Image 1: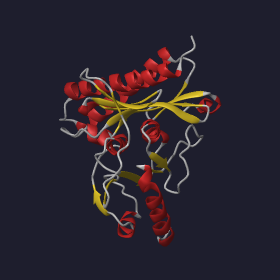
Image 2: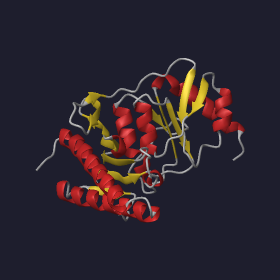
Image 3: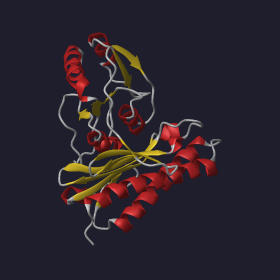
Image 4: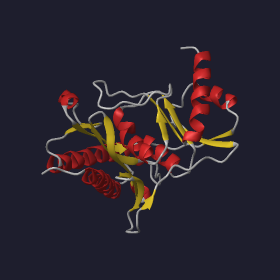
Length: 272
């Protein structure tokens, strides 16, 4: 049966939500006494759920998952689901943390066409829709439109990796005009979600990521009107032979030129 694009948006959102609910159950069942066991159980069970669900619902599509074996036959496929069953495994294993996520995205014929980022500990999914992006609460209240808010003049709240902030960050902060506040957040999905929800204004990363770290949140960010690029200003590309995608910038379009110029200038001045 031919599926409509609307079905793909709904499937991405439903799978991300259901995998997120499963992960909440894993937290309850395994507990936090053995953190390594908890993280391994979360990664495995969410991956197995998503792999089985996609095999059943979209048997002709390829899948690229952080936890699965990379089948390069996906390079010849028209449709590839790019998933991160548990983005922010470190935060998942820390009791009380909410900054971890589930990513489900669909790449088709060269571009991301659907995506969803579930934030299970917050009970919400950010998702694409046929006419934009939505915030879908898990408590049954209606979906609401999602548009990237413009930052307040004179201030930029920037979120970066907890463990690997970009080497150029200090120099960039000195160069841009707005006052910069650094906001620590865990997973890449949670960081980009924070930009889209207006909790921060910028996410910049340069230091190692893969396609599954950003595909779903990038799909939602683009649908929500955000600027998304590599730190050199070029668009990120997905379903590549080498799935490494080491850097990303997500912000409101009004901030993009200033940030990209600043990154270019300080990058040229830094060694390496």
